[in-house]
Length: 400
Image (cartoon, rainbow, N blue to C red; front, side, top):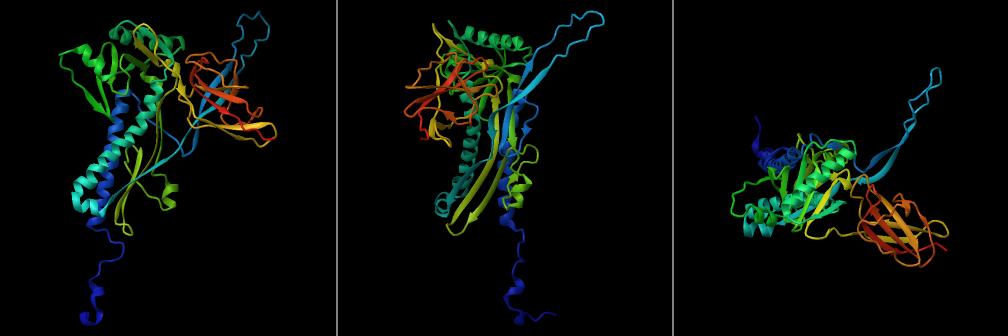
């Protein structure tokens, strides 16, 4: 029998590392966050017909493949040697997918003043919405840069032609569109339907309708300019992700709760006692984008096309060799079929949306460029038809 008086109060202390009610509540909060986030994006993937996201390691360079070669004539005389049809596959780096890190904190004072639900749970929901917007903002930016442009006199005709143009484009590429997604402005839809009652569904922050005006799915959003219709084949949209539950992170002591079904986001909550803050951490590497920028139709309502040239943020530093400069661009290519082109001149080169830059110099995104002090380098992102979609300019710094 223990002699309680001699043992003291330590006999009643909880064992070290015991999982108690507080830990269970925190874990439940983490599971709820990643599960609801995963369900939201899975709902959108289902609408888009994306059967599965492609898993990549952190900092994986995404590459597009270009096949070159010619089919030799099959008209071969009896007994003559049949010529080889030789083909080469060239891999071109286009983007890097990497983990992004986010943090939110709620103070003890805020919880005491407003209560747990308002201070923590409500801000968790807002945090989750903002993370969804990070993914969707990149997709919206790409959709708005679609290089299959045109204009029509009415909104309904713009929808019809947007669908027709992307289907025609895929046929010319020897591909079959599995369906067409259309993006339109919210006010344009209600102008068209008038007093008619329409039913909108929601997935990952997108409001949408199915089987409307000939499209398989129509997304309704204020992110799309008024009097503009955007469309692309459903199978032009691809997606990649990094698993935040990667064992290498866990080995380093960075363990995040993930949804075992989707693995799209990692979430961890903990109390930071030295500051009396409830800290929340999220990491994710998610990309939804269109493989072909020139299979995105951007159709305006009116007498002219309204597509405008996007902006690139370009900087320059001295190169490692005499007479060379090293340029950098903040933005990443918007499509895996796009490429960088540049022109070195005494002054900035004027560029308009859709300008042909085929004869400009090609840049791989890394190599240093031979130039002259005080010269300008005008950098352009072009689609696979060498039509300019974004541009930026910088005065070079050359190593002397």
